[in-house]
Length: 320
Image (cartoon, rainbow, N blue to C red; front, side, top):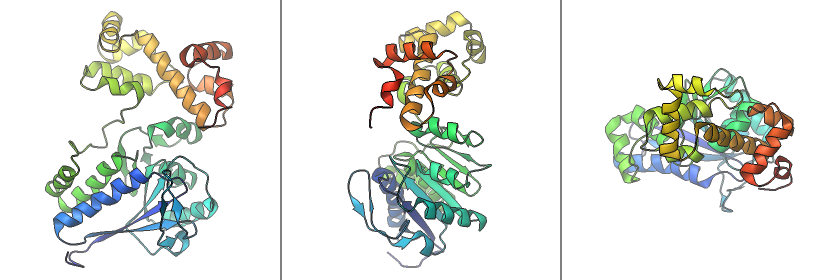
């Protein structure tokens, strides 16, 4: 490769304990592949941690670190890569550094649950963002004033966020497309057998929503409306009206494609959100019930037991 050809861009990846190796590798390899196809190192990257020491990924592999966050030289974008834990040694130092970078007008990004870290540092205030679907429920409860879309990735001015894993590829391909055009982005995607470069408007396919691939667009619209309104569930009439259908037509759609009534499907979505909140937050059980559209603690507990075979209180006694 020809060193130094072109202006070039430098990225940093802030790694914390139990970060997602998949998300990191997907992001870095997108730039590596772009360099190979360009024939020179336009993209470069470095690793950062709170104190400059090696960090253990969630799969148990330690990663060498180039810089402590306080010693990091200026880069084009700093991406926070967070996995299955939001607490780690040196978190206070990291949050302080992120706030300083924000005041300096630096570009910041997040992979997977990294949006949580940016939000805690106050760097997503007034910005649109996304996060991995497992963390979205707790994120929205903790940061209700931040617009968290649940899409595969979001770019809002100097904030770049994605849901991690394969969506890291999509976000980095969008950066490559902006730098070098559609053709190079498509060539890189082909190298990874990445069938389609997703746009920010593509939603994450989570849980039951995966069963909707290739199904009725009106059905998808109704399900997305359900997923976005779990705390104050829409009535059958409201759901039908949103898709321009009758209540009976909606019922037939759900029975044909999902094998259950709209009401049962909606209940399932609400209970799955409740389970996420019970596992990921310290919210009181009654607050979890209210956040998922239940006005009665006893009805919530009964519904939860019927769905999962255990009472809500048992989730708090289980380590995941």
